[in-house]
Image 1: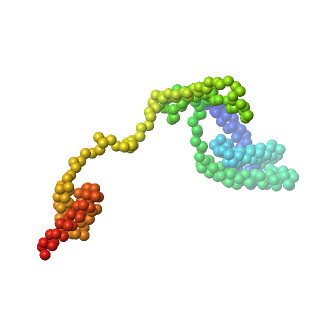
Image 2: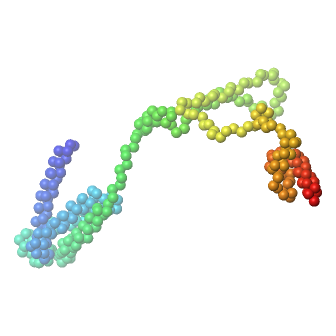
Image 3: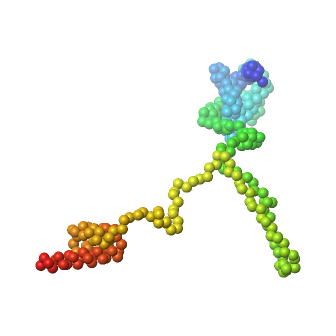
Amino acid sequence: MNRKGKTLLVLALVGVVGMAFRVSWNALRDIANAVGADERAATLYPFVVDGLMALALVATLVLVGDDRRFALRVLGTYTVASLVLNYVHGLVPELHDQTVAWGRLADWDLANWVLVLLATSLPVGSIYFGSDLVAKVLHHRPAPIDPPMMNAEESTETVVKRSTADLPVSTPAPINASAMTLPRPVPVGFVKSALPAKPPRSIAPAPVVPIERGVVAAESARPRRATGRVPDAAKPRQPKRTPEQLLAEARAATAAWPDAKVTGEGIRRAIRTSPANARVLRDTLLAERARMAGVAT
């Protein structure tokens, strides 16, 4: 239905509801006069009953769950109450002429007591139920609308159209299990020499999975360590020093050292030589220092 048709339908509904309210308004006004309401209160009484019905209907369209069921109960209760009062108005002709005794809606005392209680309790119920419905509507938070789900065909088509580089993991080609043939097991107690020798069956190599485009092998950022013996050409060349050069370097390095510090390890670290050379140099230096001390004395 287009927008114009919906507008006409709503207008027609409003007209029908308005005319029905006018008919019910006459009956409810006379009932209110009969239970002691003044002229102004009797005029407003139909709005209390039928107006709450309209409010409960709107709340039913907005609320969900338990709140919606509560609004439906209020709507049903006030609809039945309005129907009963309109029915009583049709049964008692004196209500039309306002000649009925005040507070008397039926000849049977129990029925009259129930009807008067119903007519006088509806305004109080409208205050309570109307406030509760308005509070529920104001505090209602509609649930977020989820986006429409794609059907299976669209989802499959989307996955098929994705390029290989967009896939999270490259899918390797399926391996044909029939390509590898395993030898049959030999039963227990079977004599191999009874059968002629057969050439061994060749096992077909597993198919090589091609590397798809967009997939790059991971490279290690750390350099590889040298393994095995380092060739002589790769070793750093250092000129070999003579014993005289070593002794001269040791004298210069230990000139300010006390005798207690002149050790083989200290000389080895100072001039970077072998432990054997360091011990020889230590003995030579200590001997020189002892000789010089004897000469000085």
